[in-house]
Length: 95
Image (tube, rainbow, N blue to C red; front, side, top):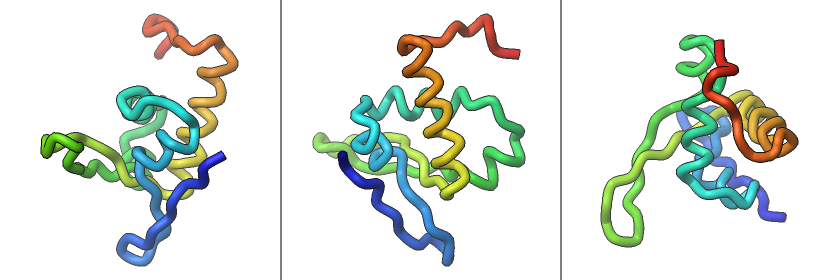
């Protein structure tokens, strides 16, 4: 299993959604969707997920997220629940 890469960003340990993609063996677009659909307050989102960009192999600017340890943990639990539920989640079940 791959290990998430952790770097210091403004003195705080962070990882990136692209590293999480490798760790969980998922497509990056699905990890982004997981982050964007987390059921957390705007304050929790702001404190734990920082929008970022990177250039893909074709030179196109693509979105990603830097995240704190708490953000990673929150996302990992959400991805785990999604996998146990069969890989899909109904939009109608969200509050």
